[in-house]
Structures are given as structure tokens and as C-alpha cells.
Length: 386
Image (cartoon, rainbow, N blue to C red; front, side, top):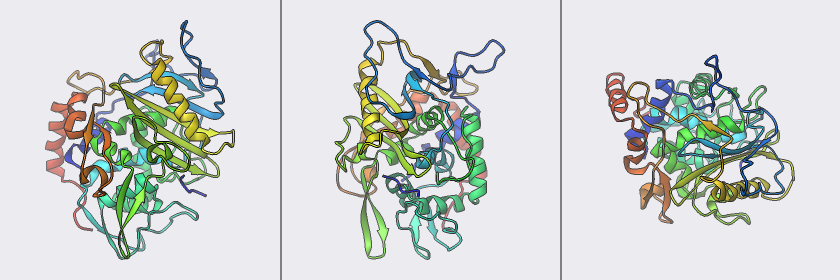
């Protein structure tokens, strides 16, 4: 079972990161030039005197706490353990595909587009013969974890296998070596794995893109239905504040998932007092109700108490422009209000990273972005009415 509990021009930032071949991996570098990896097993945590103890009751097979601004890893357990990711893999799907199509691109869905949606998949309600904008489809992906929406976007991108291959290449370029992509929607497939490290890398890369950041932070939106627009709510309970979980203070996304093989999985991001933290939690064993959310919230609490005061246990390499010596990726926060933040749904203000172009400036990728747009102008953006 795989049931999970307008894109602007600056969406090209993530594609640009992949094209530039930059790396987000653990450091320090080994003497022979290879990248030294964090240990695959065991808990790594600060040992500085006075550092807060890790939360009690952590049962996940693997987890990571990282600072999205600096790339510092604050603590981790088995960060490179290869596990089924469930729908958290949709972060890599978005990093790979989202920059390619403008939000207003319209797709009339065919039967071929929906072929192969796995039995028991989470769906948003895409129907054959109906037309949807790309923005509609991405809200279906991020809010409802709709595998039907993923299939349509993958069809637009050249097909299921092509998309999986592109995702694999994106993971490689981001230094995410633990990930093997077989099914772009995260549905259980033989050999498909990722890790807390890699999923944190994907989320961090995604949050540098204002459109990814906006979609993953959206709590509620509308989606076209047979009888008109219907309301949809994000299945991330820390974001929506649902099913017995309070909305986590400062929450800005990112993605939750569940399959029978993966168990519950979650990448959560929150921002407080100018600091953005990422927590990835894979497959808690406690069987507690809302266990994945409670463990993620506890790790976020610990991270905010600890960040900036304790020695990190590792580092995710910061994104740098390939040829202009730009500084590290430091996502900037901004308030986005109105319909743009919520897909037309008149509910609440959404906090996102890098809004209004701030993400581009913070990345220091201005010259490289200009060259990317020149290349895009020559080759053309995929999409148009389909």
C-alpha cells in the first residue's frame, strides 16, 4: 500500500544546481580527494559539555537533523542506511521535474498518462479526459501525495522510465549516493531505496527553489473536481495541524510518506529566528500513533535548542556556483500571502523560503542563472497545451 498520511521562472535554480554538477555530500574530504562519508550506522550527536541530550523515545531506523542554511549536520542515526523512502522520494521528483514546466501549462489527461498507477496508491483525483494546469498537478503531488498527478507529470516529462533515469542522474549530481530510483512516485518497487542523508539533501535543494518551497508549505488549496473545485488539505500533519497533531511552530514543509515496506517516513523543515532546520525520520518502530510526527517534532525542538552552540557531527556541502565562486546556499524566508501562496484557497498565510526571488539572491547564482536562461531561451521550455 502506498497511502500517505504558479511555478515561476526562478524554478530553474534547482535545474541549474544539477546542471552545474554541484555536490551536497558529507565532509570532510578524504586525503585522496574522495568524499568521506558519515558512518552508516549508529547515533552521532554532539558531545560538547552542556549540550542538550537527544530526545528520549526515538525509535526510527534512521534520522537526521541538519541546518538548511549552513549545511551542518547536528545529529544523525544511521544516515546512510538504505531504506524504502515512500513518498518522501517525491522531493527528488520535484527537484528534477518541477523546473521544466510553467505552472500555467495545461495537460489534457489520457488513459496512457494514468497507466500503471499502483494499487492502493494515494491519489488526488486526476481523471482521464479532464484538463489540469501544471500548478494543479503539483498541488496534488505536494498536498495529497497524488501518485496519479506524478504519473501525469512524468508522462509530460517523457515517460516513467525516462523520469526515473533523470531522477537518478539528479541524485548523482547532488552527491546522493544511497538512492536508487525505480518508481518516481515512491511506490514500493524492488531495489528502490534512499537514506535520511539523501532525502535531506533533496529537501535542502528543493527549498532553494521558491516554487518547491511554496508548494511544500501550502496547507490547503483547491483542486479541479467533477462538480467544481474541491478543497484539499496537506497530509503532512505537522504542517496541517491535523489528526491529533498541533501545527509545528515555524513549519514550512516538506513531505511525508507511507508504504507497507517503508513504514512512515517524513522530511520536516521549520524556521525560527532566522534559522532553518531539516529533520528526516524514516520508519519509527514504536508503533505509536503519529509516531513519525512526534519524533520529528522532538528532533526539531532539540535542534533549535542546540543549533549554533554545539559542534556539528558532519556537513552537507553547500551549493556553490560552478564558475563564479558564489557563497553557500542560504535560503531566505519571506511571507507570501493571498491566492499565490495557497493555490487560490483563501485560508492562511504560508511561510516559504526564497520567495520573491530571495532564494536566487541568497544562492549567489545571478550570473549562472542568467546563462541558464539564455540556454533555456535557445532550447525552449517544455510544455504548452498538451
